[in-house]
Structures are given as C-alpha cells and as structure tokens.
Amino acid sequence: MRAEMWRLYRHLIFGGVVIVVCCYAVLEFTQIRFGISKVEQLLDLDAEVSSALLLSGVRQTIPESQFTWTTQSSDHFTPSTIASLIEEKQWLKFPDDSYQITFGAHDAPVLTGKIESGSGIFKVDALIRLFLLSNQITYEDKIRLIKSMSCCSLEPISATVTAPLTSISRANGSETEYGFIWRDAGTRKTVYLSLNDNEAFSLGLISVAVVGIGITIMLMLIWRELISLDFKRKTFESITRQIARGRSGLPKGIPDSSGTLKELAYSFDSMSSHIQRLLKVQREMINAISHELRTPIARLRFGLEVMKDEVDDSAAKTIEALEGDIEELNTLVDEVLTYGKLEGGSLALNFKEISISQLVEGILQHNHLLLQHLSVEVNIDESDIVMADEHHLSRALQNLILNAAKYAASMITINFSHDADRWQLDIEDDGPGIAFEDRDKVFIPFQRLDNSRTRASGGYGLGLAIVQKIAFWHGGAVLIDASETGGAKFSLIWSRNQHQNSLS
Image (cartoon, rainbow, N blue to C red; front, top):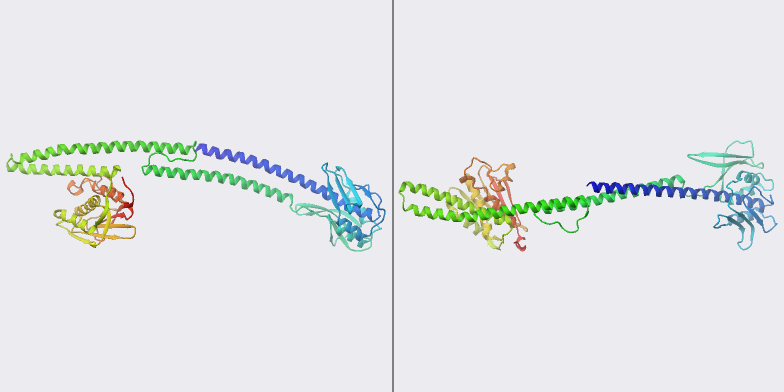
C-alpha cells in the first residue's frame, strides 16, 4: 500500500505544481490584458476628445494628445455631425503595437490619427479641461458630444463646488475611480464625468475563477486516484472471496500488476493452494485408512462367528458385545468414507423424480425398531414429487430422523412444503432442543455439544455434517430452529433448479 500512497502523493505534488504554474500564467496573462485594455481605453478617450476639439475648430493642433492628427478638410462641423463621426470611428492596430483611428468614410476620412508605441503618459486631465472649459461650444453641445463618446459617462450630482472643473478620485468599494466634477458657467447643474470601465469582468473575479478551476482540477485528480484505489480494493476482495470458496489460481487481468495488492493476492493464492494440498493429503490418508480398516474388521467379524461355536454360554455374551463394537467401527468407517466423498468434490449425483412420501415411509419402516417408542407424525401428500439423488437424499433424511429419535421425548413430526424455487422438509422433535449459540457447531465433523453423552446417544459427530454436504450438493442448506413442541427443528432445503447443473 506504500507504493499506492506514494503514487497518490506524487500525482498530487506534480498536479499541484502544474496547477500553480498554470494559474500564475493565466493571472499574469490576464493582468497584461487588463493593462493593455486600460491603455486602449485611455487612447480612446484621447482620440474622442481630441477629435471633438479639432472638428469643432476649437483647436488646430493638440500637443496634449498622444496622436499625430491629419485633417482632410478645413471645414468646421456641427456638433451633431461630430457626434455621428465619433460614434462611427474605426480603429486599427498594427503588429508593431501602433494604432490608427479614422473618423468618416474608410476611403475618404475627414480626420486620421496615428500613434506609435506610446510612452504610457496620458494628459487626460488637460484634454478634458480644454474641451469642457471651451467657450466656443455650448453646454448643450458639450453634453451631446460627451454622450456620443463610448469611453465617458455623465451622472448628475448634488455636490457644492467652487471651481468650474475639479478632478477627483472616487472610492467605490475596493476599486478607485477617477473622474471630474463639472459645473458649466452657463448653467447651475453639476455633473460627474467618469471614464467607463469596458471590461465585463474584474481582475479579482477572474483570479477567483482561475483559483477555483485549479482547485477543481486538483480535486478531480484526487478523486481519480481514490476511485482507482477503490476499484483495486473491490477486485482484491473479489479475489479473496474466490480463494475462500476454494478457487485455485488467480484470474487474469488483475489491476495494479506491479503493486502491493497483487503481491498480497498472490500470497493468498499461494496459501490457499498450500491449504488445498494439505487437505487433499489428509482426505487421501483418511480414505486410505478407512478402506484398509475394512479388511481387519471383516477378519474380526469372521473370527467371532467361528468362536461362537467353540465357547460356552458365559462367553457368548462377551462375543456379542464385541460384535456390537465391530458393527459400530464398521459404521464409523462407512460414515468417514461417505463424508470424504462429499467433501472431496468427487461425487456424481443422479437426479431423478422421487416420491418424497414413499421415500420417508421407507426410512421409517427400515428403522422401526429405533422408532417404536416414539409417535411419528408425517404430513406429506402422496402426490408430492421431488427431483433429487435418491440414495444421498435418503441418507440425509435418515440421519435427520435418527438424530431426532435420539433426543425426542415422545414424538417426531415430519412436514413437507414447497414453492416455485425450492423444496423443504422439516423434522421436529420434543426433546431438549439446541441453544442458539450452539447451532452452527452441530455441523462440525466429530463435534458433540455435550461431552458427557455416550456414543450411543451422541454418535460420532458425522451424521449432521454429511446431511449438510448432501444439501450443498443439491443446491440447498440445512437450517436449525426451535420447534413448537419445545425441541429442535431441522429444515432440509434444496433447489428445484440444481438438477439442471452438471455436478462432478
């Protein structure tokens, strides 16, 4: 996991550096553009005010202007004509950062102004004073010309001033605006003349937007890495579940081919393979021992049969007890072999239609001596047909019925039910029952809940383990619950669709 974390930190550091550099470049470019925009705005003001002075005949030359002006006509124009020319002016910017502005028709302009790369020093205050304090233009014409200028705006105010024109700076929040308070001699009205801000967005807003975009990109990088880690985690969990179910070998296409997760998955796979080899050796050894035990058991049984004819009646009882022990040993060997086949995965089931009523009735008749002291109630319709392996299902039901008989006080109840997906057979007794915390233990091989019980009552601990394995091979399970009669209730459930699968 250290490699994963280092890769995440590396991406974050690299991404952070890239984002900081990009943000700096964008902000620097934006600031330069803002500076150029402010310069062009001041040039526009210079050109519009200078054209008004030149075309109205107030001045013949304007040394305060940044432009070099060329007039094609010596005539003076009316204020309305000048206003139209100002509104229809045309700008040109050349690659060497020089500008040209024309007033009038493009092919025959009445006034042309050119400027090389400027010094950046504007005499806006002097130009405004020349225009507003001129006696050759009436107040109304000045107002009309100002309204035609795209870079200026007028706002009536109620300030008391002593001079006809006062330059001021106006604080508006975090920004400072420069303008003029003007009161013409021919009127008592006072107006505020300010320079328009043609920018749609402020520098602060663009800065916030750039930083927000940078943070968003950083979060997306972090989210991408977290999604990748979560995907690898889910894949690893899937692999561990497959190994837990007994699958050997890792699937192809594991992500993080050189990372810690795959190394851990290979370690789990190696451990699983080693455990499977040990279990296989153990099963083979138990099966071999069980098979080999059959021969000496048969010899002992034959020898005891021969001895019966050569001993007196006092020794016959001892021989009968020994025959009972041999029968128990033979039963144990049979259960061990059966459990080995069910556990080893070498079982082949033969599914066919079975009358569950006849199957249960046959088991009850075969074990009538063990059940004669109990009342057995069977609630199964004779028309109920199931799909199962008859031999192994019979073995499972017999184990459940005999297990209930060992602990039942007076009665056993057998109920059958089914739905569209499964069949279910419930076997209940009125015995002492099984504690909730001990219900999983009864399926552990050779596990008995009460060590004080004798083998006659407790068995060898393989019967219910065999039932669980048979239920598994039938696509079902064995559940334990409390019976309404006070004892235990075992429910054998198996799937209707399991016979469609090929089991081997």
